[in-house]
Image (cartoon, rainbow, N blue to C red):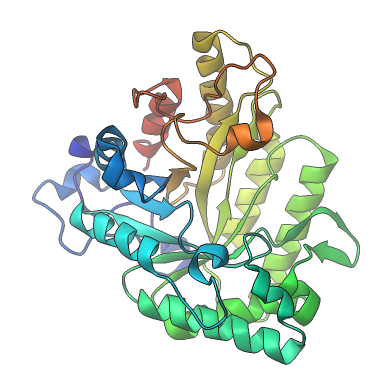
Length: 360
């Protein structure tokens, strides 16, 4: 579904189930908006500097995407080099690019255990942690109020191996504030921008392993607790970094999505790619297996509910995080994304197009 075929309009399934407005809707649809009313927006994580230096990369984003999210830029490490300094260069440039090309930008992320600047280790008390987190969210969300419609407010809060009484991942926020940092982040973001979709984003919930089952349950328990206490929350982001050699727990994932929707929460696919380090070397075969794994994952979600957006963590194999952690033993390049290193579409893009057109 190239951009020229995806005419701007009332994009996505929206938040009808939660009673909220569609965060990705366009305020000024074109005359052909009716063509897009049944479509789900597709987007990609973007390396902002490359939009200036690599024409084919920029063209691919413009051609295929209705949404963008920065790979970096809004993470604490990039945004806060010192306690008294905010550097908005990257997100400002990305949102300008999005505005110029009729796209929406997602915000990633406000509270995360990772990519923290060293100075945050000097946060020594609960009062200091609360003050710093509130100041950060107030400043960042306030800068983009009304312009970034959807935020990953809390990223990867669930422990890798949840245990009774220890289901929340360790972080400076967890260590200083305990579990209440999650509520604090959500309430602060809601106060600063009441129109924004507030998302809890997490990973490793889709495979038929005990770990994934435990993480699904821990995440559901967290969501129920927040909902029971009327903490503002609108959606769950399912990242979807899929091990190519592992089946999808279709029943488990579908039931998870069904339960999330029963809580009147929306679902987004936020960081889809397929980790291919254990798949065959031959590129055609590998691309087909990557596409099949993504299809299995998306089918399990769609069996329960229609997500309001599908984003991949990058668009071209030329730029992907995967070889940093999952380099292939045979030395061949990883191929986890919808376009190859030359920005040509692969089987995975066809699968994504099929599902983004499948809205009803």
